Image (cartoon, rainbow, N blue to C red; front, side):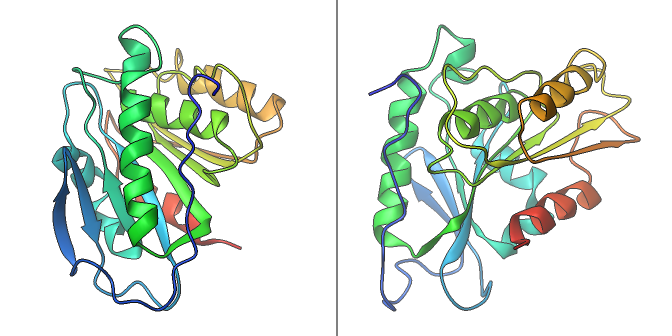
Length: 216
């Protein structure tokens, strides 16, 4: 198996009742946010990664305005941040693959709307995962990323990048303004938005990311 590769895939599941009611549920060290009623048919999945020093609950608050539109899975990094920033892909990849497989085995997930998403360090990691696992992730939603570090690429998932022009944690000139042109040149379908603000995910930005995920 290639380093950074995820083997989990959505599974065909019939009209069985949802295994958990609407709300927030622990799933090992991860959290699963179940929507009330996002519509008929399989659910979109947003796999949302926290920033450095963060946690799943804080990551959920970043995208709370759009959480009702999808099944939201929020893992916890093994260390203070994601493994690629602490020595290389490995420990977190295994944990991510396991929790994704658990969700795919129990929930009707739409294979055409599986998004790797994240904020800050989590955005960098989500973007890298999407680029390495295009057979799984149809979308990559990166809110204020610092970089992308795929070891290999697979497919061309749709990518969404946003960044605040006043970000004092990850400077936009050193991060997204360098990253976005590289992704365009590489042929990725890219939506790139700058906003007047800091290291954050404004509601309007989250809504734009959701619109891209929901588009045909």
